[in-house]
Length: 203
Length: 203
Image (cartoon, rainbow over the protein chains, first blue to last red):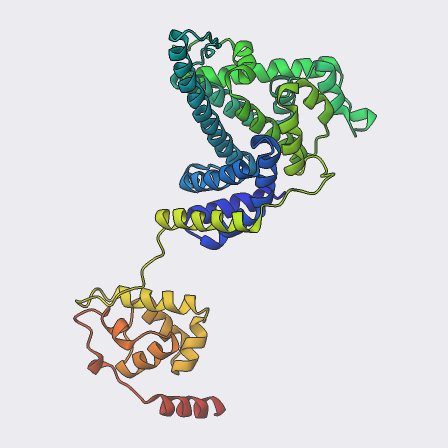
């Protein structure tokens, strides 16, 4: 997948170039549909089609907000997941109504039981948390490769120090290989750099 | 004053604070970044550490080209794409309406817009300044000065120019300044100019 080409296509589409939009859509339509039908529609073709159509429409409406920092495919999948969640919520609501009806039936002497919904954090809490993490993520992206890579592997991929060392030493000559202590030092240095950047932003 | 930040906590929250979709997107992006940097890594270790999203993550890594595809992608049915494409275009048209064709202004406007208008039309037809100048029988500098709004062209040359760039001569003339007076321009008929230039060249 050519990321640079994608960035150009998106930028062109954002400036009103319909041909660029068509190229972008054609490039991702099958991969996007595949993901939806495999992970979001639970094998139901009608749901897959509905999610596919609705999320494309939403993505185009928000095209201006795509900053090219993420992969285009994962970006449009975000819309598909939101829509899938909405479908799920509607279904749950319908179930809740029927539960209310069941309570009425209770009064008539028929016993019914149901589990209450689990408490979910509000959208405002989620937004604050996401924003803070976005800031940290942005600061990590600015780090030089030798510091960024171990930080990504430890904190985003959730790998342990030995796995990180193994990854970094893969396909490297013996003379270029690093040991656990070097990676630990790089991680410490990276954290110091991040702390400086983030504290600088806050002050 | 600088605010003291607990960087370890912030980094740990990177995985805890974001929703699954964001985490998924970030892991895919970082894998793509690592590949771009020529780094090797063990995908199985990543999938294992992120077992709660491993199914979607694996598919995304395959679709993004991080992992080789071992199966055929489920293609979007033609009729579903047709509908989605239609809706995409409708949304896109709302955001970026097709530019209206240039209208002839009611009142002759500034001289500069005539040159710009002609240059735009010429570029649309992919004709160079030299080609136009050659067809008009004027020097490239002379023509270039017209497009640059530094010198007018005779009425009859404007008629020829309008034919070359496929617009009406009124459309060009309407953009000329009020002070423009083609009568002041010495005009030699095109055929005579060509003949004379040819003879001069031969000499």
